[in-house]
Image 1 (cartoon, rainbow, N blue to C red):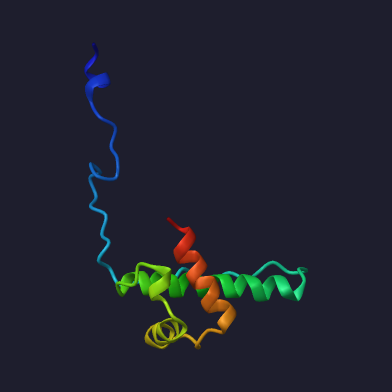
Image 2 (cartoon, rainbow, N blue to C red; image 1 turned 45 degrees about the vertical axis):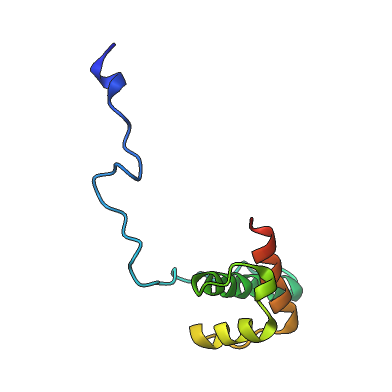
Length: 102
């Protein structure tokens, strides 16, 4: 058997560069949204992004179950990460993301 066949392919765990996960969060560069869609599409899109940010913040803070994420807790997480408090609809969406992501 050739030696090349025995050599493992580099993966993330055996890569030469270490993958740093402890770096502070840095948001991705924003791009403009596509033009020409109905206004409701933009509202829903931004609501989904906000719900994802909030779900990630809750998971990072130790809230792993949707039943633990009451509206007050979601709104306090929003204040902690520096975004406007979400509406009841967005809070519902956060719980749905936490519930169905498993």
